[in-house]
Image (cartoon, rainbow, N blue to C red; front, side, top):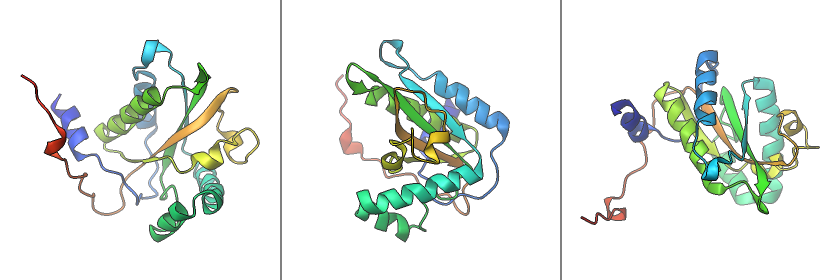
Length: 187
């Protein structure tokens, strides 16, 4: 239990990764944790594409940045100011896609829970992460949009979010400041 609480307390959004590859055993452990995520009515509306091919990640980064420049110039400028790479040189990433259920793309809650599971499993294994929603504009054309069409996203599923994985280059950043005022205890 202490390890889980420590992972929660020390996790932060890493935006500067080393080029060191991820250990395959760690990738497999994170993948298993993702599949064990809870979901509403156990529908498991997701699909996880684990990418450790650096060439594919770089191609996705280039296409995503081009798309971002058109669809969200403010986010594009912010990304440029942070080094110009949307995926921050991550050694790997997990694309979470979800199927349409009841007219919606999966359940935002289910995808959110799976995302949290992935980042906490990674942190527990000593791997840093960053949740990246900005690439979805390019990823949502995955059926025809190279390189996104190589992610193995099943038909009827839509790209929702990515989790970047790797080892921090340099010092860890302090986790966000917690706001005690956002707690209420009823006893």
